[in-house]
Image 1 (cartoon, helix red, strand yellow):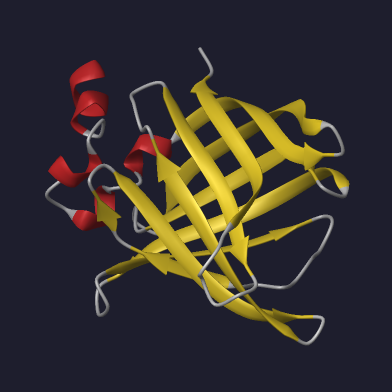
Image 2 (cartoon, rainbow, N blue to C red):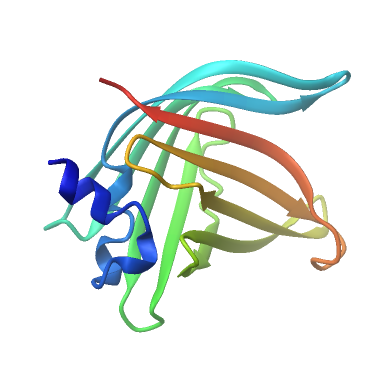
Length: 164
């Protein structure tokens, strides 16, 4: 089993791009961080990820903390064969609906997924990044830009460790 998981340690080495998120399958403990008045607030969370629809879609169930408090979330990811990009969408208990789509490709062992929408009449760019991907842990962060991508504000960070 370890050798199959090690194959995903460096996602660029995965020859089938539809399998690049296989590293995420399983049960994970999470440390969630969000900005607070005096630094960062930290709280535990958990995540379970599996594949469905003949292994073509990655499903993520998440519980953790966000700026509005505790939340439960659902993420879906699939590799778009036409665009050769990963597409990701998300909804949660704090803001049901709002099915934004982020898109991106794996490069140098990480993936940046980008999305864009309007919030309070202003355009928002969003970047979700998976990095430091290893057999039993990975790092995720979410950043936003309100100036067309010139500057980015980090607003949610999650480190996951595989549950034994």
